[in-house]
Image 1 (cartoon, chains in turn blue, cyan):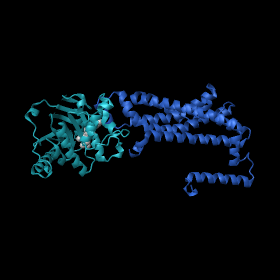
Image 2 (spheres, chains in turn brown, green):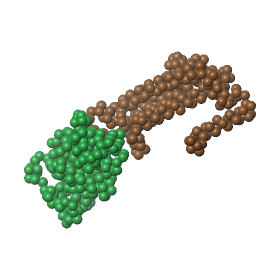
Image 3 (cartoon, rainbow over the protein chains, first blue to last red):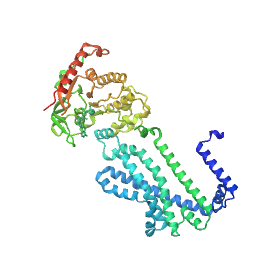
Image 4 (cartoon, protein in one colour):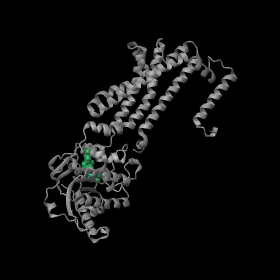
Length: 256
Length: 260
Ligand SMILES: Nc1ncnc2c1ncn2[C@@H]1O[C@H](COP(=O)(O)OP(=O)(O)OP(=O)(O)O)[C@@H](O)[C@H]1O
Ligand SMILES: [Mg+2]
């Protein structure tokens, strides 16, 4: 493949990294101020015994919290769809949780929970709302005429949910899931940072705080690189999942 | 061929009958006032009237999707034997054509395998044999409407309610579907209640036209349209022109004189 055919984002990235490398070397900038990309990669390899277990901790918490947010968000959305009364009772609570910055809640959670539980709770709290609100919106924005049709043919509430509301809501749910996946990582990192400040924890963000105390800047960058790659991987796999599930009627949302 | 209804049919009890029916919606809109209407077996009844005069409301009352606010409504067909075709195709975009048409049978508790012949037959009736595995968004507007009609036909209903089914289509497709609809009616013997804004469509299809007036919705006139129809050029015949004129005059009167 020729360079011209390479996708532009990759070219931009490669160019930036090359420039970074050259500037750092030419100016003789010390690694504790700004490490060159090559040094970051070296650190990633040499510190792998510290960084990869930390990566697993962070990713594990993110994915568990996301799974819980999917379960809780979808279940609550289904409840909302059953009764306006439930929706009016619970939605404000969910919104209050959503608009309170997670970074402000994290230290409080750490008072009551150990750092692992607090990480899970924070990631859950931020991932939960977009999944809930998107799914609830999807369940509610069913074609009125289709609802009439199901009613006409005597469909039970349950069959209406499974055969009509769930598939209608699927694209909305998947959009919420993509947002929630990214936010779950943010929530987990926020909790780890708060935990790191109090000297506890084992995740990637904790390693960043710890390396910061020791002025080990290359390791900070290496950990940051892993977080960044985790975010990209989460987004890419959720996008792939949604392509897989929506398949041939993917453009239905675009045409509405 | 004559479209006149047999004496036996006229004597049979109506499929549905509205007596002094009024309908108020929750927001206080009086959609219908004092409507008397019988749906006779095997007829093609068209509700013709301006926007907002309660045509859809009458269909929804007959279908049992709304209840009258006052007056009597009797329905002498069983719950599973009514089909509804909406102005939009109203297909499930995530389901293949087969599954869309299978839906009424599925909700009636039939298995996929057992329903397959009925689904295929319905598709053949609307001229879409072989499209089982297409998704709705792979079809043209006219084809989607055909699928929607096939879905209504699949459970072999005795009564089909159609709410401006062809309003969104171009005239060529609309004429084609009009002819198909007349053929389907001959082949299935179903009773059809049809809603339209189009005088020509009403005159072309119907055995009876109920002309409706607005504010509040009511039936202003009934026109017997069971004229003999030479297939092919009915649109060019004097009988058709006379029907159009009668419907048009009734419509003008209905819109001019507002109820007190
Ligand atoms: N669900 C509803 N809630 C409140 N008002 C309604 C509702 N449905 C219809 N209406 C009102 O009732 C009246 C009759 O409505 P309907 O839909 O039956 O008219 P229509 O003859 O079918 O009109 P169109 O030709 O535009 O479809 C209108 O004034 C409309 O605004
Ligand atoms: Mg209408």
